[in-house]
Amino acid sequence: MAERAPFALRARELTVVLGGVRALDRLDLFLEPGLRSVVLGPNGAGKSVLLRTLHGLLRPASGSLAWDGPGGRPPRQAMVFQRPVMLRRSALANVSYALAVNGVPEPQRSRRAAEALERMGLSAIASRPARVLSGGEQQRLALARAWSLGPEVLFLDEPTSSLDPGATAEIERAIGAMAAEGTRIVMTTHNLGQARRLADEIVFLHAGRVTERTAADRFFAQPGSHEASLFLQGELPWK
Amino acid sequence: MFEILASFGLALELITGGDPELAGIVGLSLELSLLASVAGAAIGLPLGALVGVGRFPGRRAVIVFLNALLGLPSVVVGLVAYLLLSRAGPLGSMGILFTPAAIVIAQTVLVAPIVAALARQVCEDAWREYEEQLASLGVSRLRAVPTILWDARFSLLTVALAGFGRASSEVGAVMIVGGNIDGVTRVMTTAIALETSKGDLPLALALGIVLIAVVLAVNAGAYAIREWSARRHG
Image (cartoon, rainbow over all chains, first blue to last red; front, side):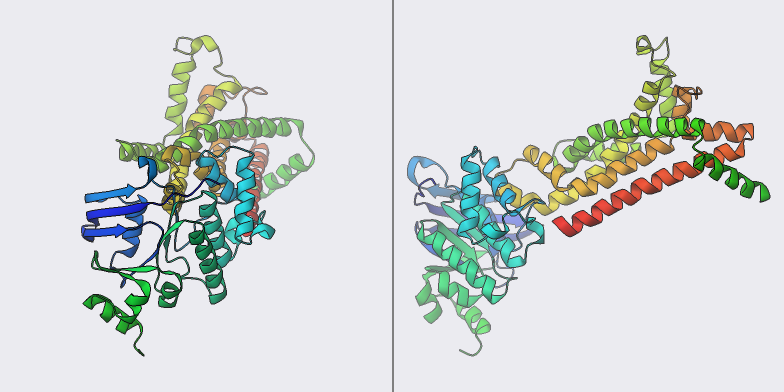
């Protein structure tokens, strides 16, 4: 497995227009290396759009996006989506496919694919067709696929929103383990408990802009922006 | 009405009795239709996938053109193939007019657009589902084409089958380029047309029953494969 290098990301005046609507509106964001960032915000704030844009799936209409790391190369990245998309082949073949299209030759390909499944506790179902696995297993497989690529930055878009608590806990463990290995985590969630458990820092998004970027423990105690405190009151009415 | 019933009886006798003439016609029909649908799928599936997944200037025009080819009048295809393959035509030196090869070529020309147009839709739908994930993995559109073809393989089997259906039920083009020569290029459909016009209704009906049975059996098989695959692969 290749070493993971630390990367910082700087987005300036990032604007993304989708269907005539400004999903991101001159957004400024700096992500330091080595932290686990959780992007919070109400529906429609632009969380998913932000992750897709940072990952390169969406092209900004204007603004700049720059990675800062060793050698001037962009980081190896992977993304885990809310609903995992599996190919109609075995669990193992889904991971091998990702490695193959990224130019990993045999026999390393098979070895690393098997290792990825083992990491996520999926070895026993390696030969099962991926699309008939349970939601939790599919999401772990998506994580295994992402892990196999040795990402230096991993984006996760509400990875547990359709999973039960047991499966959610497994996914959170896996994310924590990848962060501990040096993978930069950037994720969104609607689960504030999850944000508390996983985040080093919270990036709060409102109407396509970052209203604050705050250390996680401080954010939940005393958010720095009006929008964030309204959001927390709405999400946690008993507080 | 009585005549039709009598014809049915005779037809059943011919089928169960293993009439060699009938068997020969049926065998040739299946062989040529199978060859043409394999050739048509080999051309149409990659073409459909390329148009379904690709982004290139003129893509819309290509889709409209492909869909228009669905209604390609087979008699016209036969006529054009006839002109190309006839002794004075540009491909006349091949000397294959009025041979089974000419029938396969004409049928392939009819099958390939059907397969391409239907495969385009199937692959475009699959691509919509996979696009983000594949892009995230670093898969280019061109590299995605074989991936999509393989992942949609069970739906595409049905598409290939539609091609087989067109090939095996084709009369006009086959009559023109094949010539309906007894024992050489006489297939089920042209034999039915001939026997009907001669008044030999039992043989025509027997052929018709076999033709329908073949189409039914092939479709039932494909349906079973799809059901099985949906349960096994999701």
